[in-house]
Length: 330
Ligand SMILES: Nc1ncnc2c1ncn2[C@@H]1O[C@H](COP(=O)(O)OS(=O)(=O)O)[C@@H](OP(=O)(O)O)[C@H]1O
Image (cartoon, rainbow, N blue to C red; front, side, top):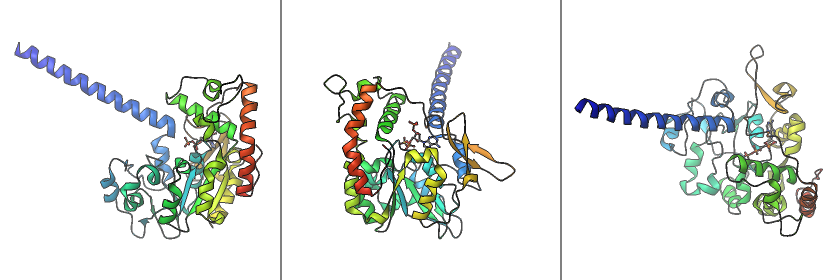
């Protein structure tokens, strides 16, 4: 009997262990699907493999990891503050190819300090950054910053001469992309048309979150009121897809960096339908594309809904062009 009881207990323990292991594996898989593989991200940091610590949950580990001699963790001199779904992660990865850019490129990719973790203090934030050498630009991206009216003043208080990158893309395409993200995360089971529908037939609802968050002008006002316009560079997210080198070139100029990202740094991947990063040495190059969650195929949208959405966006786009002093093709 005692033997049987012990076997039952150890079977139960084995069962619990099995469930925990499966959960862990599932979490790792989801993470890799969304962001590409960890080894890709590690190799992006160049040189020695860095241990990836999740600093949100293990700040003391981050603190303990010392930088090599001559390097230090600096508060970012440049922040990608928006807009979500405009290609911010691809931009981060592309900029990370630059030898003078030290982008935060480990989990969690978006620190969200100025909105969600503000109370942890600037020293906590500084420890989230990669070790950089003098002359390198420390950089992070948290595209939700753009939606929080408290964030501009907080960033300014950190660094009065910070440089900000704000990505925009065709607001209709952004709205669809944002909807697809909701579906993939299980936050919506509706069709796109149901999600954005208004009360009357074919009408659209300007208060639907995905639509509202594509009214760029409304969110950019506090940023332009807080910073000098020379501190803000608007990145064309549509062009980052079709002609990334020239878009990144403008950013190199904005950040006063030498032009190092060239046609040789990126390669168009037919299967993915997007540019991917070239990594490694000349004789051992590998192509690192974004994970499955980036560059999803978009569904066909009902013609009337599409037309009405574009009509809704139009006056906001015009105001945006005036604000940023540049027109886009939307
Ligand atoms: N090179 C490359 N590879 C893959 N994807 C690329 C690339 N360049 C830009 N994009 C576009 O990035 C869109 C996702 O935007 P974000 O990274 O800003 O999304 S997020 O806010 O961080 O979730 C993603 O949106 P979807 O096409 O809807 O998936 C892409 O259109």
